[in-house]
Length: 92
Picture 1 (cartoon, rainbow, N blue to C red):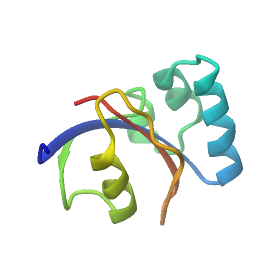
Picture 2 (picture 1 turned 90 degrees about the horizontal axis):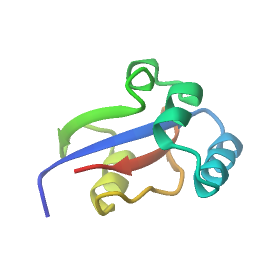
Picture 3 (picture 1 turned 90 degrees about the vertical axis):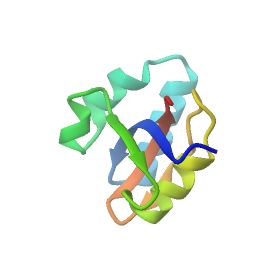
Picture 4 (picture 1 turned 180 degrees about the vertical axis):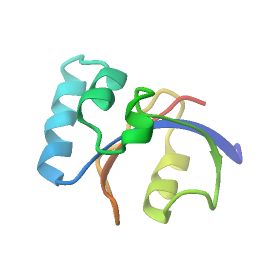
């Protein structure tokens, strides 16, 4: 397993919002477009949710645990952290 991965995420405050976004993704809407429109993480939202590369220890534990389990191209179910609910997509 790589010790450095690249992910994007969509961050929302409520689980119901995250579940609604999951439905939009399943119906074919683009991850980056939804991140730009709906994510409350203003820094990454401007970049289609892109967080760039990171290693273990750089992100909050629930996010990190989920992100490192994903395969490239895979999208997580909503992950709760102290910041809200993340939907994570791994790119590399």
